[in-house]
Each structure stands twice: as C-alpha cells, then as structure tokens.
Length: 101
Image (cartoon, helix red, strand yellow):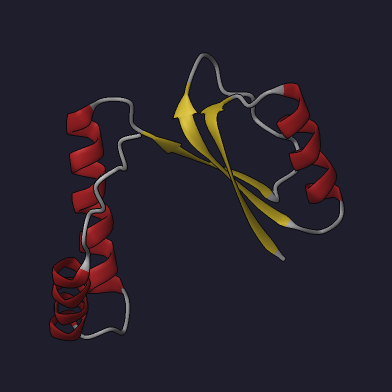
C-alpha cells in the first residue's frame, strides 16, 4: 500500500516520525512531503521516501514547471485533452467570498 503524509516540515515531529516508521514496518510505502527545516534524517527503511518542497517562490515556480513538463511528456495522456480539462476546471472554478459576521 502506498501512503502519502504531508508533515509540513522535514524532519517531522516525533509523533509523525513514529507513525511513519510503524507504517513502513508493516510493508507500506510511505511518502513524506514537506519543506526541509534543518538536517534531513535518512531512514534505514527503504520504503520511506522523502519528497521536499522548495521554500522560495522562485523554487515553487520552477518546481511547478518541471512537474508540468513531466506530466505532459512522460504520461500517455494527450496534451491537448489535458489542457482542455485544465481550461474547463479553471473556468468553472469560482472563488467564494467569505461571509462577514
């Protein structure tokens, strides 16, 4: 089973760290997502995979462009149909204004 956990920061808190190690011992592949804060602890269990997010805006933009490139050229999806879906969802997306009490 594959499990993804967004911790917010890597290394995670002790509770999340123990949760990850317990899941990995039970034959689960655990993906840990977050930004790097301090030194990364390398897990001895190979079924724990860390995915780091960049902290800066330019890093986020470059990461988004890279992931979009990988999505378009590495999958079997048609690029045109993917852009049609993105356009459909962006037009139908409406921001709701917060209610003022």
